[in-house]
Image (cartoon, rainbow, N blue to C red; front, side, top):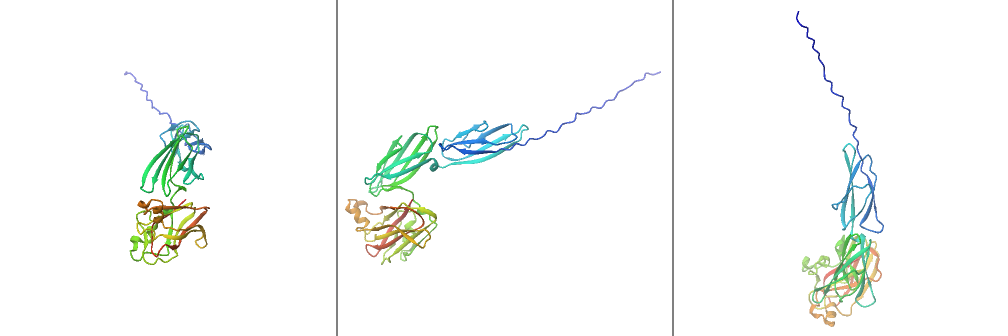
Length: 347
């Protein structure tokens, strides 16, 4: 009798895989500017369902604390990126742009001291100033030579400028935390000047050069080029009214006229108003001038005859207010023709 062989057969059963529950985090936060430091911001984390996080501030820095305070070292636009991770590896972002404009952390003012051509120039800094540098570029209008003058660690400097000069300056301030801001401005003996002429939205002139045409047309008066001119060489019909319109009300504190490149003073305006309006219909006279001597003749009289042409003459507004329309209303000229290189408005 043969042997009986018994065989056992078994089946392997794989364990049942449990599904992992995915946790989706939500990145969220608020930003609060520091009231005393224009470069410093407090971040308040409001994120949910996260196990770790990373803050990147757009300036090559990384922070992994929950609700950090961050100080930027320069002005500019920075994008803060908060990335939060869940325990299951998913993540979420929230982005906020921080725009630190130089004018928001550093302001400059200029005041007359009572002495002719002298100004007291000061800065106000949103932070604790540890170091400052003023750089003035003084221009001699008789020969266009520029002289550089610097001051360090002074909040206020007193400067005397040459008559008829249009100068520039910059001030750089560094805080006790290492943050730096710089502002540059133009300045005349009458104060800080920012040219707004090119920001106009419309303009018109009651007269036009119909002989030379566009080469010396009315548009040349406000083209921003000190080497072009508006000329009218026959009997100039006065009044000439040159009007500029702006998108919104702006306060003009100063205006400038650049005389022509020849003919002494015979083609200069003699009497004019600067007028302003809120609606383009009703006009206020904000400055009036009646010259007894033309531009070039005046420069001859003070010993600057060698550079009597193409010079800017500046006229401050005594009581500046915001208006949307401004016009140069020329009442009379010294003779019959007219010639001016540039007309500019400054706030």
